[in-house]
Image (cartoon, rainbow, N blue to C red; front, side, top):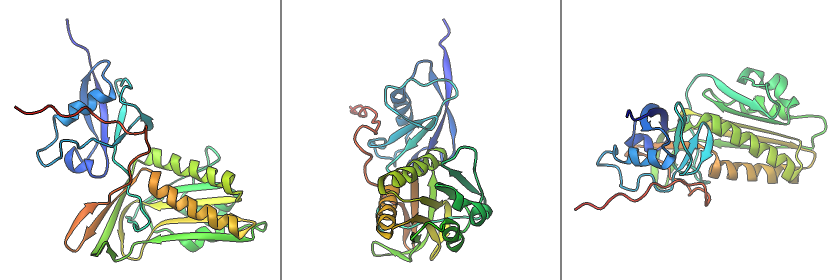
Length: 277
């Protein structure tokens, strides 16, 4: 009897790209295979330089939704391997010229960077992943409305040092479909939790040089205290949870920025590697 197989598309991010394929690649698995089956298959392909527990503490996305180890995969599924995100208050960003992907809280109203000044102030939540320079003045102007008493802005910039090392540049990458959704959900939660009128979040991707803006948040509200609180909550939560990873290049080397562990219940750990004789 012929054994039935299927193909799944695997995308790795952050440090996992150093050990697995740097681009999306196809993996053949038996029908009925689970996420755990896939991780065990990939473990066998790890190079010697990779640690045996390379998948410990990672999360997995199947078709841009978080998945558990027991989830059954199907032919054509896209599986994202997600190490902890590059969060932390001491980190900044990166970028490269190109397009900008934007979504708002209202379906079907995606916009580009050129639309910000004219129309984004009309929306309650605007989020974007950009590969072009972030125009802070344009975004802030678009956020203002006659009913606002304050617009509080967080402008995260790339600095020239980190942890005692001289920084040359940074590179950001994201699992874009999941990250844009997470950013939008956080914007909506900020409006509900703090009672602010409007939230804009734009995050750069790609190569960023010293002094460039990596992430910009603008919160508009009738009262300044709510705007301050919402802005602080947004940047802290984005850094801890949104699927964006950062590679730091220093004068003496480079490293993927470490991240905080995923919340309990989100990780998918493969079984321990077998002991060698």
